[in-house]
Image 1 (spheres, rainbow, N blue to C red):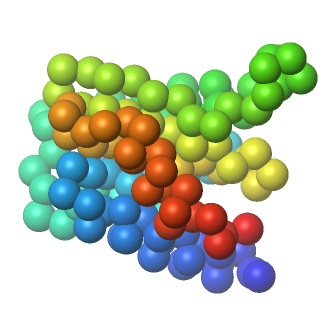
Image 2: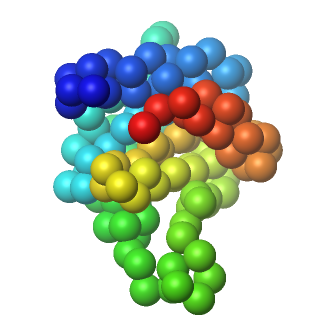
Length: 126
């Protein structure tokens, strides 16, 4: 599968996630924190400064998610989650390709349910 085909498939998977009512943002980020597929839900008015803060968060999460120091003793990272007053942020690393999925959802979102939905949608992507 070519890189562009893979990115297109990732974009389609992100669009599927964005159909969930509580999800505000679903994007695939490379190891440098650059958005390569997905984005904000159509028609959504981002919180003030969302895009700037999101870029900083993308860079932080991309570095944190590819760290391996506890993989041998605890196993690899399945996902990282942060619950804030205005949003829930969850990242899912794809270690082999060194990219990650980042989701921003409403603060009422159930993180475990989000994780299950992501696994459902992304299971067939390599």
